[in-house]
Length: 317
Image (cartoon, rainbow, N blue to C red; front, side, top):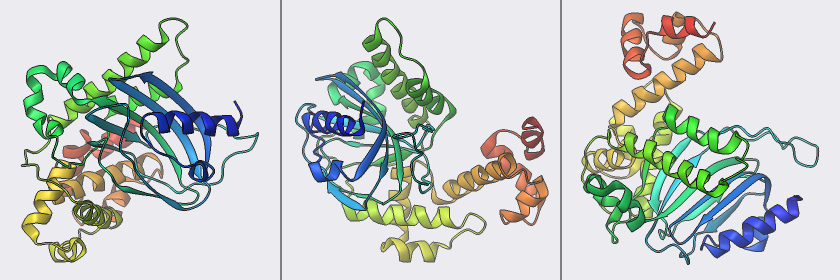
């Protein structure tokens, strides 16, 4: 399928389900890969990989075909080395993987930055249809089903989620029962996500304004940008523009863990990356991540990664 036909295909379907995209917006992205699975009116799954050719913003519109929809967005979890017109796409900015859950009707402005590569699997599901699967467990996630609640949560990627996303994207389509297969895969993806969500710190969910969401993500970005040295609470309060209690509550509500635990988790994820990809020694990684005591580094690493760094490193060879 030509790039032009790909753009028209995804444009027509996106507009059909209420994800409004103007013609000029479609021209600002270069689609490398796409799959669309239509199980309307209960469920839709969209898979796409594209490169942003020009920086632009887009305002979401109200949905048309999925009533009381909840969107589960699994972003940047699969590799796509496909070529476009025989040439590789431009070098893209590195974007971290994440899972976000939000009401499909929630209006917000999205910023697309030139040369960013977006790789996403989106599952949009009717709230009552989802509750029919959760049954009595739905009470644990009641905030998802409160119609007047503007929520947004972000969950850390698990190995099960990663494997399922890549299974959906990379495996050849089955020769028979294709739709049945992908509907089950979409539900499998949600199953693993809800397993992860059930382990989150308990928090009272309150309505989030767009300003609240932007502020909490500024706090998160500051934490991620300085993994070798924790930011002070004073610095984070200044960035958030809110008092400490509200900042901590909203952070836990969105990310499922407290600020310090979140910092340590991603600090150890970076440590594991340095061991795995940069082939640094355990002591080099520990000191680079700001630890003066390697025994302390070992304890923190094991808590978050599940293995001591030396054992983790030896398993890579």
